[in-house]
Every structure is written in C-alpha cells, then in structure tokens.
Amino acid sequence: MKSICVVTGTRAEYGLLRWVIEGIHHSQTLELQLIATGMHLSPEFGLTYRDIEADGFRIDKKVEMLLSSDTSVGVAKSMGLGLLGFADAIADLKPDLLLLLGDRYEIFGAAAAGMVGRIPIAHLHGGETTQGAFDEAIRHSITKMAHLHFVAAEEYRRRVIQLGEDPDRVFMVGGLGIDSIVNLELLDREALESTLDFRFGPKNLLVTFHPVTLEQNTASEQMAELLAVLESLPDTHIVFTMPNADTEGRALFRLIDNFVARHQQRAKAFTSLGQLRYLSTVAQVDAVVGNSSSGLTEVPTFRKATVNIGDRQRGRLMGSSVINCAPESSAILEALQRVYSPSFQHRLSMVENPYGSGGASQKIVDIVERISLDGLLKKRFHDL
Image (cartoon, rainbow, N blue to C red; front, side):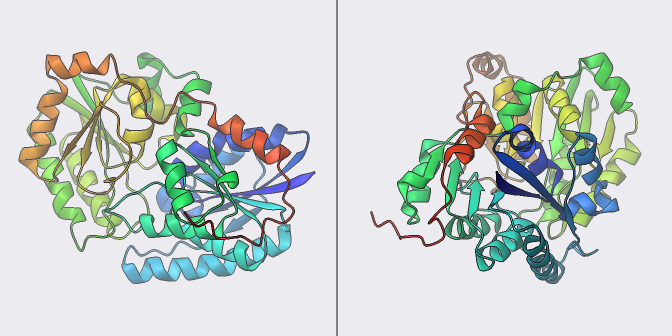
C-alpha cells in the first residue's frame, strides 16, 4: 500500500480534488491521508472542513494557519504558520507521496515542508499562467519542488517541461473540474431555489470576484465598478459567492453585503455554495461574471457565457464562451450586453471546453497506483 497525503485549503480546491480523493479512498493499492487547512478551518469562510467529512472522508490532520488579516503582512505570516504546521503533520503521517493542487499560498507551505521532509510530491494543474496574481510564482515554484506533474492541457505540459521537468514525469490528464459536472446529479431549478432560499428572475448571473493580488489597492475600486453595472440591471437576479482569503478580500465582503442589503429581492451572497449548489447554479444562470478560474475551466462545459474581468486570469487557456473585459463599468456593461446578443448565444451552442471532457481524476489515480516512487527525489534538470 502506498500512502497518499492530499492537502486541501479552500472550498474550490476541494471541489476539484473531490474525485481524486474518492479514487484514492477506494483504491486497493493506495491509502488515503487527508490534511485540511486554510479557509476550511475558518468560521469566517464557513468551516468547510465539515463538507469534506460529510462526503465520508476522515481528516487526518488540521493545520491552522489563517490569521484574521487580509494584509500582505497577514498573508505572509499565515504562510509561516502553515510551514510550521505542515512540518509537524507530514512528519507524523509519513506519507509515501504528497498530492497538491494548484497555486495558493497555503499549498506552498505544504510543498516546502514536503520537500525538506524528503517526501515525493505530485502537483496537479501546473504549467498554467495567471499574470495578475502572485499565484503565478507560487504555482511554478511548486512545480520545481514536485516530482510528478498532472496537467490540464498540452500547452501546460510543454510549459512544465520548459521549467526543466522530465517529460516522462509530466502527464496530460485534462481539467479536474469537469469531473464533478460529469459525476454529480445537479439540482433542477425548483430544488436549487429551495436550497438557496432564492428565486431566479428573467435574467440571472453568478458573480465570483477575487482580489488581483499583484495590484496595489485595486480590489475595492474594481468591485465598485462591477456593482455599479449590476445596480443598473433591475431585471437581473444575482447570486454572489464570496472571495477567497486573499489580500484586500474583506473589503469585497463588505461591498457585496451592502449591495445585497439594498437588493434583497434579487441578490443573495454565499460564503460557500459547495460544489453541488455551485455547479447547479451555473447550469441555471445566463453567465458567470468575475475573475474566477472556474469561469474558464468549468463553465464552458455548460455552454454558458463567462465575463472575465481584468488581469487575474490573464494567460490561461480560454474557450470561445469567454468574454474578456477591463475592470471598468463601461466595459463590463458592454460585455454583458454581448452575452445576450443573438450572435453570441448562437456561438455558445458550439463551444468546446479546452480543458477536455472529464476523466482526469481517474487518470491521476491510475497513474499513481502503477508508478514507482523509488528514485523520484533526486531530479535531473531537463534541458531543452
């Protein structure tokens, strides 16, 4: 049996990892270990570790690291706390492989502790670029600390190899988010309205907007531009999902709460929808608006529009269902008008998701089951 330790720190990341965790849990040759950290353990962000337990998984370790601060200093201190906590957790669990997804600062601490602890690391969704966020540097740093790589597209596979990784250890499996769309039985409109305690209207939007972490003090200003547009659309009903624990995130919480308080008949905000309600909402709305990666990696599978605002996701692969716009009210309004245009609606019927059609989770589990972990730690830099 190979013990595989999966680390998760956010609701969105767990949604992507859900079926990998399931596959490891039911494997005859793998033993699942699970570490929850970051937003999962925070009352402010919904204590979403309970969602993991509700899915039937045992959490082996909880690493507290999130401070009640969204300043740069607070985030840096959280990273330090995380490194301390992960060092102890990994030393206690002694996994054969550490499995990490993505690019958030919580996961950086886990990768650093695993590297120093001489634990092989498998990294999921490497090779991607997001030019507006410091996630970009974290993602590529984790790639250099990792030994096995599972990427979502051929372009990303080439980029990981460009970073000096052995091509034989880089596996193109597709996007993980599509697996939940395929595997879950989504709620119909009536059931979704009941569980959300919210009624959809003639037009409907799902809004997820996060701070652009490589910009100084722009989060509130950009959110204000978006809310000004939403204010001018009285026939549009809006579901907000709250931002992540990033720098300047709390200011966005306050702006959204104030907007919802003024428009209670047509707007509602959720700290965490959970994967089932989130994807069910995507299926019911006209467009997903904001700057979340989900708008690029998952929403195209529904053949729904994405209005991608600003630079946070700049550099990622995008399908033809994505409309990019500047974080300015005039540009956002123009993008939303385009969403409802007959020509764009016709285009949506032919959209293909550049991140594939599903099956990434099972491919990852299959490869981890069969691959030998012997000799992984000493990496040879692959020169092009």
